Length: 413
Image (cartoon, rainbow, N blue to C red; front, side, top):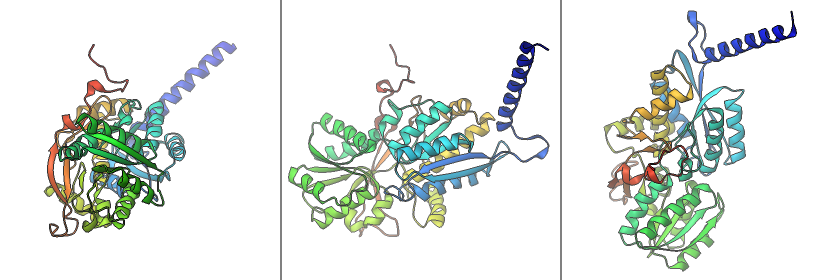
């Protein structure tokens, strides 16, 4: 036999075996054999400043979604993995490469932290793997950083700015000073809110930048106080937001002549601060546990496992995991292309969001409620913290698609 025919036959056989192996990954086994698990992962802050807002709660919410779906899809058991990136983009990237490679993780259901999310969704794009995002908020995830296999599900900095920022300016908060965390999320949140303030006739008089997990907020608060701005915008999240508010109260800035805009405060933070400190703050969350019977029913189940009511990021992890599994079941495959198309085609209508939809840039658009934190006298039972004062429609809370910088968006003209 000539070398030409030998190598040609070997190559055909190798290609046939590779194709057969790839098909076997998605197809249920014949004859009742053991199916390969479909693995879903969450790369979270499990021990740092965002662990209360994502962490164990987000991983539990995704696990609840899998259990409520029946624990299987396409005849395959579904496994949920979680890992702590310790707020390191490099570590998040290493985990994603390991999961999408040797560990054969099919999709990632969340990545907390915008810097970490940007690199993980880029890896997912190059590996043709789906990445769902609930914890991060940077608008650039669906702008310059968008990919064909990622979905930004819960909220972003544009929505926060155009819901909370607009409301505070409308109430007379025309001059702002920002205390901003030195990372992607902080920059985007300050930039988006500043744009809203100036567009509505207000003025940004200054800002102070602090590192993640700043040990003492006093110097930044003193700069804000001396600026005499009507509003102090906290463009941070997690324990940094809580520490800033706690320290401001100790410095007798709360209550005081300046209004604090906690741009990323979640219900976990309100619970930790207590109503006496947090009362009167305006905030926006996509989800509130005490909205209706459906939110209360799910949230009480979550509370039984975690001992705390869920925030919007954790409820979003449940909703997005369910939406993903429904798309896999509908298409009969875990291949990213068909599953992404099925997710875009299907509206999101559950306890988390009504009339939500996924746009070509990967943004899940939905309405955004605006809340006021109740006073202690207004709260009648545990976790009775919010009073809804407005709901911003989806088309006003989301950046218009024709202004998108995402290269996947086809613009007219």
